[in-house]
Image (cartoon, rainbow, N blue to C red; front, side, top):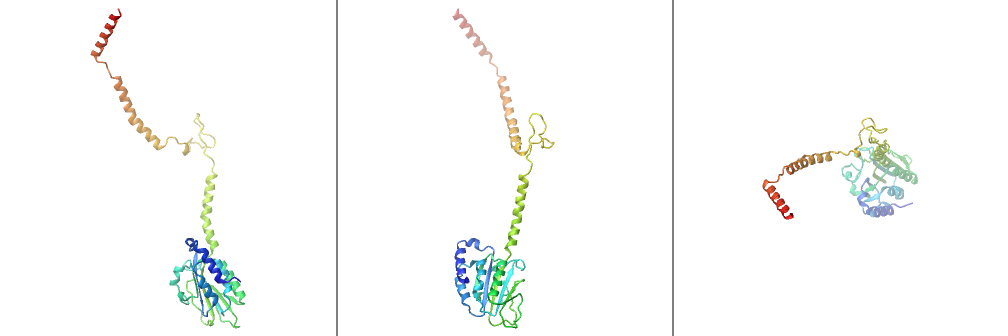
Length: 282
């Protein structure tokens, strides 16, 4: 039988390294014993970080022993409680049988406390102690041990009347992690289906060049797909600006060059130079 205290010590050390993610999906565990219990005291002394793996703690609950006539294990399932889930911050507002500060064992952050794991542990614990497992307490006629296992739907934990002097009360929050994982997978699967639909769409056909007709399977409008659209809005704007500014400047320059004339005096000088050259040649 694996003892509770070594499990708590090892889990505390392991989760200390990843404390940033350790407080997700957590619930507290509190245990009150009407009589001193060595296993609970040892386990309480091993709690250092407050964040401990739930499966390890649930699996070692039977190691606490069978020192009580009645063991009440009260879970608050997130699917059936008004608070959606039991968190350490909710403890102060709950109606508890005893003060939380007087708990013999208090683990503030029990990581991923799955309901199925707790069910199995309580059943094994009751079987080990030879106790009757019920969901509502009634005094035993034969004087045998009784394990009361039920869900506190409204977040209040009240002790029934007629409890024997030796009793243990355990309070813990639980949740159905399989349902939560299923809910998280739904949008992921929907996203994958959308991506598959896009990937399986028929490729867009481009119009055959030179004939003004469309290629097979491209529809009747002859339009190009977006990635073949050459004349985009920025390009058209640039062309309009270029032609609107550069073309008038170019035309004005050509017109100015065409209107240049040689002054008459320059013509006379040119003629006199030509006559002088002819005389020298003679």
